[in-house]
View 1 (cartoon, rainbow, N blue to C red):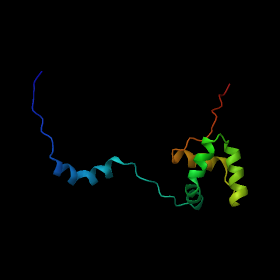
View 2: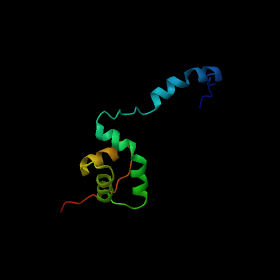
View 3: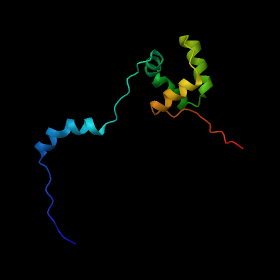
View 4: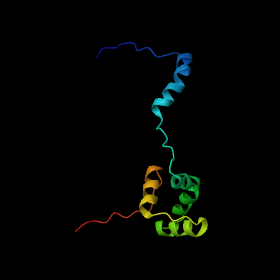
Length: 96
């Protein structure tokens, strides 16, 4: 094996490039342009807590409708959860 000396950037160079690195490395946030997504983003912590507490998706959707007066379809709810890395209680049905 060849033993080559590898040079590394100095601390000043690293600090100068830090913002550029973060821009490239971080996942871009999707802006919630739809009012429903903005609303769900506002209550996402409550959704996460409910899921951790063992609530089902239908219970959460029912609670949202009763509390806030907003009807959310199960499909848009699961799409929102998927887009925001919230592990919703979804069951994969196997086709026979």
